Length: 204
Image (spheres, rainbow, N blue to C red):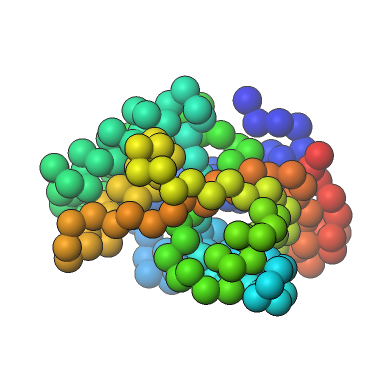
């Protein structure tokens, strides 16, 4: 169940993204629609610390609930390293097997640390980050989070996020092994230029 108050952001971040994946699976999404929809996956991650106030664009996505994370890690590893997906079928696999709403945790957002620069240096000191989403022309959300950094290779969240990345990016040598970033949502603000936006807190 999606907590009261976060449903508006969840509609934007997950459900509309899932609808776009379905259209891609059916061959009904054009490139312009795909590129606009992709903004839901690439917020600016804003941190503050030894590296100064910093904003960095990172790719993020929904994360399954704790009771499903091992299942998702194994499934992602299967498609990344044992049964390579045909690009034509990738969207359908995403829709049918990964973007299953009842298995997702609406209070978690996952990503990988691949740059090891300003954001990484700040997060080593402060575990706070704000994710700023913007989809033109008016939609924007500010998501304030506490960040968990996972470096244990056996951790299913790290396994899942690295393998999920590798399904689509296919590293030339072996598999990726980046630290996982789990953004735990604390507050959400609607920053859209609409009557219900302009910095209105919608969660909690």
